[in-house]
Image 1 (cartoon, rainbow, N blue to C red):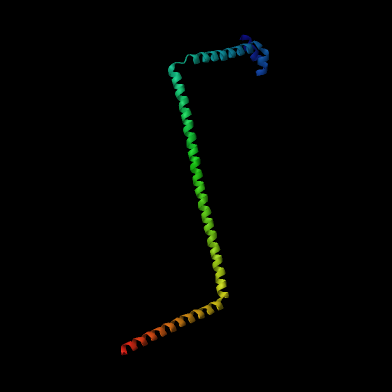
Image 2 (image 1 turned 90 degrees about the horizontal axis):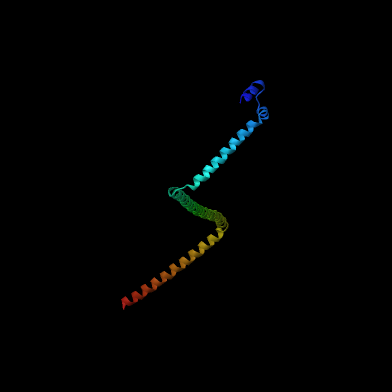
Length: 161
């Protein structure tokens, strides 16, 4: 290590210079790092084998809860999707019904305008029809009067006898 301290003071400190000047340092650091990694791996693997019933039950229950939670969430997503579909279908039906009603009203408005035009055009026809109807009414009145007159005459004849 003294050699390292002396060389640091004399030259500029760069990682490349440091590593090229001291290859034994690289070997020591690399060996220690590798030993640390291997030791921690061996320790972890050994620790896994030492599980007791409490740890096993705990992990099994955790996995069961995850599984159940996943199923519950899946069904919830399905339920929400179905509800969303019902709402969108109902909304589309209502909008379609409104659209058909609007079209019917528009057509009725156009039909009414056409009828108004026909009425104006057929005003002479209407006057002719009114005259025919009045003639029928007058004919009925005449028949009714003649019936009453005949009934009255027959009553007078029966009363005088």
